[in-house]
Length: 621
Image 1: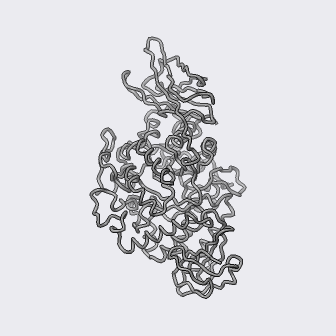
Image 2: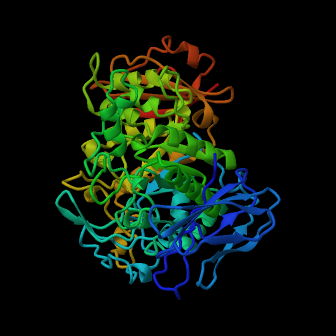
Image 3: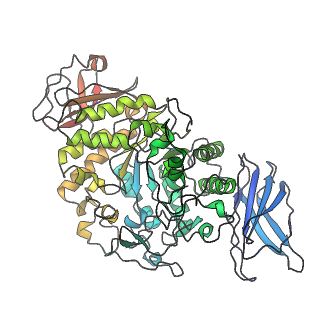
């Protein structure tokens, strides 16, 4: 696999200073091939390029269809030392143009205190930066961007949340028990407001990239992102960055001036994909249906990248290697995974893990079956294409947990749906690498979905923090933020109360004094589950054994040689006294149980679980 550096020069006058993408590179990567792409208004007259630096060799010069590009293939030998070198451009009758470029030292703490990967022992907290906390009101509006509005009263506008706001709430995250922070994309979204669902919407969510190598200045820019990463790692936490391979914003330089026409998919025009992932493993699927999934544009303002173009693939792979090293990213969550070229996805994963062996990469695709979810990761199925992703966002287990808590029990309804979903883990090579969740920024909030029923909510939290996989909690769930999507996602992306200097201090949910009794009870409940999970070998890495639901009661066990945790849920209308002979193979030898939330210790036999009750119990001898 050839690594690509994209060097972008964007001046439109001779006196302007060039921009470089990436802004620098790093000495010591395993991959030695680099590709520089120079972009400036009319480079056609520059006929000679030279680089004089020990260990760096220019192999080939190429031109694109657009006269505004030069593509340079380089080799950076392992002997190349960190330092600055010049790329010299010459042409007849033209002044020499020099572009300074730096090779930096790779961080010695990679794989130790940074770029550690994310495991099933972690607890992931999903934050939409613009909606979490405003630590620096001075960057709410950045002049020069296409959208300079910041209106908290408008749910479609930017609200001013930033990376400093996350840094300032580090103590809150630790108190909650968070081990890993996942932010929706932080990349620059220099887009005007766009029309979505009949609304004029800002790119506050971060998914409309206009410059991969710049963190949005309204979030604080690259320096603020490095500070957040450093502070997380100093506090024993990790960072997941949100990736988008499939598309870019319509004001990205690639969209405004593509090097060649085939950098963007156009075979489907601007028609949307049909979203049917079955076409990739359906033995009867048509090529037309596959192409529409791969080439269709989500919406007209999100041009679809053509990863069959080798230069596009290299550009994307190279950025993610750069960002991992630059910011110390511990894991990548890949947006819209199923819409990308399959060969490209495997190449990306291989390139990243070759340079960063501990890095975790998991994909996001809202799919309709466990087969579809398993298809996009390492699996035990016989399929024409084999994906190599470590894990996926586990929508099927999400839907099953919700159904198990909400539905009346029957032969195929209620608790049995969760049992069914987990039974199909036979499809996965590593089900522990899946990310499990109950809601996110694209879904109705879980407290509302469960009818604001406290017992059902606790039941789902118990499952979330004890089932196999990496649990993810959406910001504000711990203080019972609620709402449904109503013609927009914005209604489930509301501001965290207390995150803005002008917020009512009596409703600052970051502090115990600003929470209602019910919110405090919920925060404490989730925090105790999360803190127990941190030191639990059974929940972090243990095996799972489940039993068929009986009488509306569902039991499963997580266990290692050192610890056994039992999770019991009764969704029936009556109290149930478990028949322990059914569960003998897991409870034999234990005489007592400790409730991990309340701390209560009691005899394992002779007790009943109440109607709609659920508990997480550590078994004791």
